[in-house]
Amino acid sequence: MASEELMQAQAELWCLSYGFLKPMALRCAVKLGIPDAIHRAGGATTLPGLRAALSLPEAKQAHLSRLMRLLAALRIFTEGEGGDAGVYRLTPVSLLLVHNAEANGGACLSQFATSATALSNLSAYLRLDEWFKQSGEDGGGASSAETPFVMAYGTDYWAADAGDAERTARFSELMGSDSRLVAEVVVRECGEVFEGVASLVDVGGGNGTMAKAIAGAFPHVRCSVLELPRVVERVPPGRRRRRGVRRRRHDGFHPAGRCCAPQERAP
Ligand SMILES: C[S@@+](CC[C@H](N)C(=O)[O-])C[C@H]1O[C@@H](n2cnc3c(N)ncnc32)[C@H](O)[C@@H]1O
Image 1: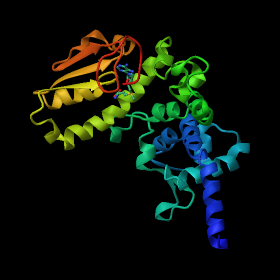
Image 2: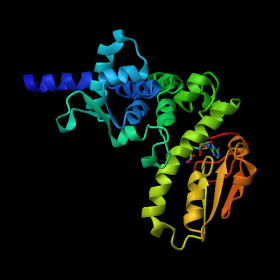
Image 3: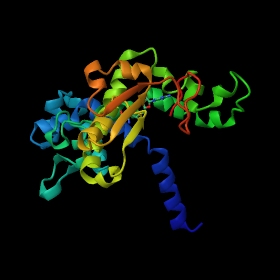
Image 4: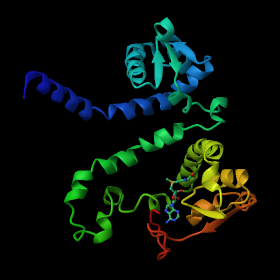
C-alpha cells in the first residue's frame, strides 16, 4: 500500500473502532439533559451557561467542552454558526430530544435514544462473534442460538419484558412517540397509499398510535392492531376501541404473517 492509502486505512480503522463513542456521547447528552437545557435557554447557550444550567462541577468544564465539540461534529448541536463562537444551538436532531417541544408536536425521542444505547442491548451485541460460532445444537437447543440477545439473556427481546410492567410501558411509550412523529408525515404526505384500502392490520403496532392516526385521517380504513396481550392490557379500555380501530390480543405471530403456537416471537 502507498503511504497515503495506508494512513487513510489506519484512520478509518480508528474511526470505526471508536465509533461507539458517538452513540455514547448522544446518550450522555440526553442523560445530562443538554437538549432541554439549550431549549430552556431559548435555543442557544454558551459553555458556562450550560454548565450552570446542568449544575455540573466546575472541574468538569473542560470535559463538557470536549463532549460538546464531539456533539457539534456529529451535528447534534451546532457551535459558532453565524459567527457566534462558543454558542451552542439545537439542530433538527437535538430538537427531537427536547421534551414538550412545540416544533415536534410534543413527540420526544430521548427515551428512544437511551433505550437503544442501554447496556442490556449493548451486552448482547458484544457477543455477536460468540453467537456466530455457536452451532445451535449445543446448550439449550436450537432456540439458544436464535439471536445474540437470546444467548446473552436466555430469552428473546420481547419475552425479556414479560415480567416487567414498567419496562413494557416505557417501551410502548417511546415507540409511540416515534410513531406519532412519523404518523403526522404519513397522514400529510402519503394519502394516496390508503386509496382503495378498506382495512389494515398494524402488526406489532404498540399502543396503536399509528393506527389511530390513520383511522382518524382516513375514516374509510378499518384499522386493527395486533399486539402482545401485556401491551394491549396497558392501553386504557376507552382507547382500545376508537372509531375505526380494533385491537387484537395475540399470543404469537409467524414472521410470514401466520399465527403460530402461543409463544412470544418477534413479528
Ligand atoms: C419495534 S416495536 C414497534 C412499535 C410500534 N410500531 C409503535 O408504534 O409503537 C415492535 C412491537 O412488536 C410487538 N411484538 C413483539 N412480538 C410480538 C408478537 N409475537 N405478536 C405481536 N406483537 C409483537 C412488541 O410488543 C412491540 O410493541
